Length: 254
Image (cartoon, rainbow, N blue to C red; front, side, top):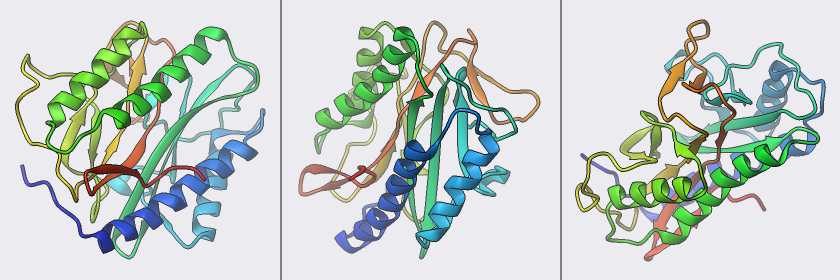
């Protein structure tokens, strides 16, 4: 597994891409209203990102049709925007990628629409807190599998389960690169595989389900991923860089 190591000047370029994503997510969170369609939300995100001078990197990536992944309620990731209107009580995942000068940014949040249930609020909080917990526990020299194990342990400690078969990832000159960072321990030994080093840049993205970890990909749009239990889900993501033995969040909203 060849995991790229980036120079500070490279990371600065990715940080600019990450900040464009963060600003776009913040803009959407501020302006999404009940009654909007998922397609309108996608168009609003794309317009804002382009206005910042960045390309929407998801559009056309692996033939994905839109700039924003809009994952509604039971959809945990890769939701395709359509004419579905959001309503009070929904929860919505918005995942955005940016590109400029050959560098990439990527982040996601799950947000409440209007007044949501306590159960859904707890679900959203789990993916958000899991991401924070993972970031707080990253250390140079630890193995990515150790990090995956910690993510899984935290999700399960909150009464939820991680989505299987999908993962966080490296990012840099491509939208997705090594390493693949699962939200659970594959196998039984976390003391295996590549170690985290200074200069690495990667995305962590806890994907939280309620009962079943087994994914189900939508047969119609070929993209939207749900849990097999078809219950509501939550997803948060940050792009991170390792610099001088510390983690820098490149997609932190200011």
